Length: 528
Image 1 (cartoon, one colour):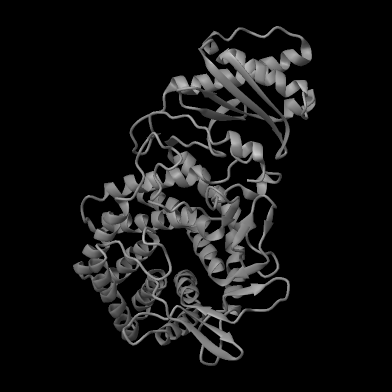
Image 2 (cartoon, one colour):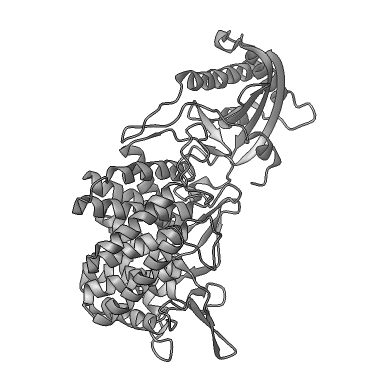
């Protein structure tokens, strides 16, 4: 967020009575607040119209609320502020009037002309002593509630979720480099630019999501692009030597060079995608590549059964990262479990069993909220990977010990979910995790547990759906949309991207993948 004015006035938000959904949530927003916002916007537009036409301003009696009011107005056009104004008054109506008059008077600042004002969107903040503050943004004639610089989501329905699925698909297709068919990791919305690398794991994750999207609704673009994206992924795999089967982490679009960094997470997530490709096409090259990657994973283990996270080649010599990571361990456990499910190769089962037992022991020791050498002790992502990978191992072992452990871990995660309906900035997200990538992943994991729970009749499954909907509300609220991209110069490039966090106008490709995977799983569970 580069604009200081937006920093100052968008810290204000309406505090209302909660969140309603046509698919399972409780409280609804106070209609008085909604009407008041629209009254404010309508009156502000009337004052502006009067300035240019000398037409009388209709009396808005609903705004004749006494108090010590301060109102700020900004006019946004093509991502730029073309004017600002501030007003005070002993009624809300007077404060709005004075703010708009200040906006148009040009006293010491730039003011929009009539054409600019007609084409712009008004953003209005309102404050009063001893009362909650609020902010709104104009969108298609309506006043949308703001928190920070995103529009508040208080209602979910299947149509909204479907819209977000389609927007996420469009975003992923834009995130693909058109020459290599690899995928970028990061899009910076302020600069409307992608990073200058394409990365194997993000390419694999994107193709994995695109396959799910194509299963949901046939799209000839995805059908045509699938073998091209797959070819890029396969081109990143090492074909000989000590790291045969591993994948280069990234390819530089500037130099054309592949880096000499080989991460077990890259191989694991790519195995997920290769197996999905093999399931759909029966092309042996995908299974062969998955077997080669899994065999490399077997070499990346410590004597105690834990995994070596990555190896870098520096000055011709391998440098191993042996810090303990629940994320990388979980990715490997999931990959080996899925490989056994397809190949019945006992080597994969035996290696997976060691990792699964280590997870069970660590989970009990850490009171079912796992920590490691990579992330902060309050981060729920390490525990979520224990949940996902133990679910994958449970599917091949059918041992209830692993199911009990993963469910305890998931329940512990949800003790950290924000559930105060008066805090709509945070409602639904997990603990201290402010990144949409982490929350999206936890939501995806929960959706996988929910589907398994329903399929096998574990009982109590609907509680997972309630947690998912809370997370989805927060994720959708923190996704670039037509409503909340008023400050971007190229909003059409950002729409569908899940905003990285509250401080960075960036999109991580994996956040989009995890978000849409969870949405699709919810649709799958509802029969859509």
